[in-house]
Length: 93
Image (tube, rainbow, N blue to C red):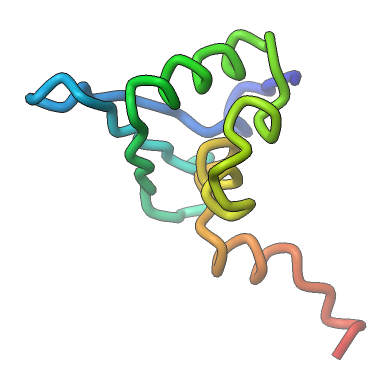
């Protein structure tokens, strides 16, 4: 996964006060003008998320229990509606 400066999402992580999980916040690239999204992960899921971020696993192998749209949010910061709007081909109408 190659990340080009200005075209990659930014991420921040907050550990839950109870210590039982994390919330990952993903901001799509600034030029898209879209809001930050968040995904809550258990401790086990967060460990596997880190393995994906370290390029040890593909995200679908690391977090198979998450929906496609939730994994997309972790990868790009795009919620399902934004992804469909951006990926829409007007010639298909």
